[in-house]
Length: 195
Image (tube, rainbow, N blue to C red; front, side, top):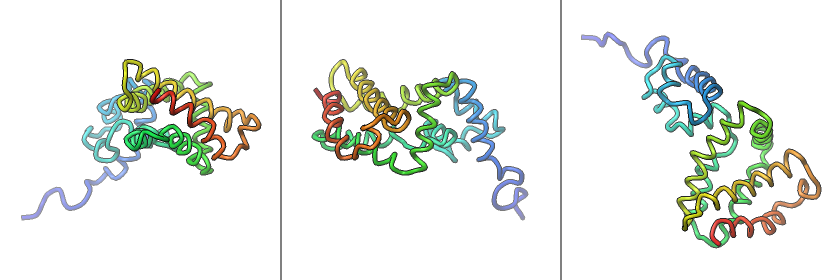
């Protein structure tokens, strides 16, 4: 007896991944990061939510791909903080600056920074992503009742650095060597994290 469904993917479903991404962009755009759900994205795409998880894993992974986020600080920074405490601030600054040395990362990152600062639609997406996916993960690695505040101070320092160096292109920060910036800014980030 033969299988009535046949083998391989069901016909007409090969574009499901593309439809999910398009639906995610629409949902995130209309409802922000917090308001969009895997379920609502799946419904808009005409697929089961399990298929969204199959293709993309988590909501953060789906957002990162739909928005073409060039960095995953929600993954990298907690990994940095899970390592030795000494020098964590310097490692975070180095991770961000070295990542932005890649042309594709820098172009997309600058576009997202400009969107976050100047766009009514973009700001809730980026702040929602940071507030839900990055800052709580950083705060979990910190001690004390002000862990969330200290995580946000780190974010403010890094965002300010990125805006100054890559968007505003203020001199001499725009052309300063990475090692110099790491040496000067890293201790401040370290203090925010652990002092």
